[in-house]
Image (cartoon, rainbow, N blue to C red; front, side, top):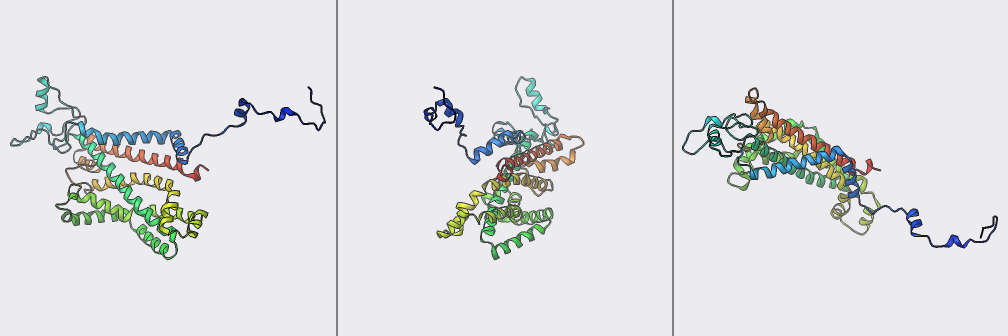
Length: 352
């Protein structure tokens, strides 16, 4: 029946239940998601950051698992047998060259694992030393960033939440540390602490780590937390005036509980991003300290100490200097690009 125009009669067809197709067309609901899932989707779309993450993971896995099956040790001098003179044919080998004893074994039909990067002037396999150096540099960067993260987050949270005289005192300490020349203070503290800790850690479990590495961690704990604390303080200052914080105060919650349960979880994205960007800075600091002879204790290698040792023979063996320099650059560049990608993906202000 044709509906008449200009009538007040109700059309029953308008009150019929909608079909499944009509519902699917009219209601287009977005699947449920979380802040972390959204951030990971944005990170995955950032190809540069995602490739950088793959590079970091591959380098880390190589530094962990390659020494497990590699036939050479980072400190073993090839051709050095007890009671016999050192075989000089193993020193300064070019990539994929063999010593005299190894050449004889190959002529006899035995399989000898190649020296991919050759050997150094002490007859040690250079590839495994680069791998161990990468492991040391990554470990130092990771643990140093954790130290900075813990100290900076704790001090920044206390300063931002309590404010007043507490904030004033902490910020003046931060200003004093900021005014110090970073590189000079790092070198001085590393030198003094390295000499002081030698006798203190003798005979303890820390002796295997070495006084220089421990002094490096102490330097990070003393100097490198200020940037993190300022960043966290700024976040806490804006968050402490929110309604849920006022509600927690009204119910009698203590400041420590509010910081741990409300404030830090709400700025966790900034904390993670800052920690990721702190790792390349720590690796670079360890590298130049090792280059100056203030890093890891010999014979344990790091990328900086390998580059420093390569200066003596860089004209005849330039790959000794090029390889650790390229690895340092690749690690630091990948970590910086990945940190920038994390910031772009998880910073709410950039994705508002």
